Image (tube, rainbow, N blue to C red):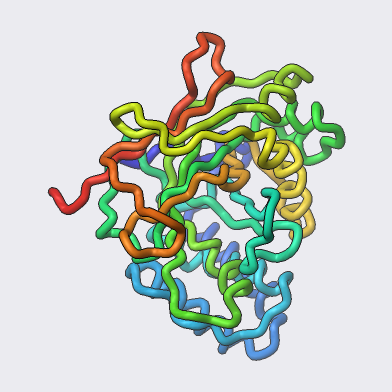
Length: 318
């Protein structure tokens, strides 16, 4: 049921290394960076408790450590390593906080980022059960690119960045921010990998590094539609964010932590303003009630059909 977006050793041009050894080296590196924090053992225990809560679909308990943003991102790497045996390898990144309107009080000014892991991904059209998700889970219409070239790491202009990407990927996500009240929510959100639990990726749409494609992306229309063709909500990227701006921010933020983008990775750029909870009574408006949802993106394909990603919902059945 998992859709593969992994980048293996052959794709990256490196020799094969035993997975266990790679994991140990990676963990030692992440730990050495994160252990610069005072009382590192206490922070590590809090991160481990968060990982345990998340993997067992419990409300995340308050996160006591007071960390700087830089320290929080270092500990995010440790959190991801703790999740890796269950949720797989890192296959891309996500960002948020680039949309207009009131800023999210739980995001740092300028934006936030997290890591996409292979085990989060379900096939396009897969079925989820709300009962398997936390009480605050919500379905989020997103937008993603696929990295096509390492040139993106040195790209400067919008067209150069676009040339480092090879496809638009229809994308939807179900974050699970179910948590107890916490005055340290921003740091908890960074360390906790932005509560990323489940993702859906549709068929990639090849793109070209042209001004026409930039204009198309900046003005794209999109909607969420149910199985009966009813439009739940429709909007335009022209009123939201410029996709290449979000890619540039994400690339630069990763590089400030010594991370380069790799061909094949997915970059989720944040929500498109169409988010609704999966459970009645949750914050965020009326819950989704239908049994199937399509996120549709218009004007991207050569045949005029919308690019889509589909999510099925099973409410209490087998």
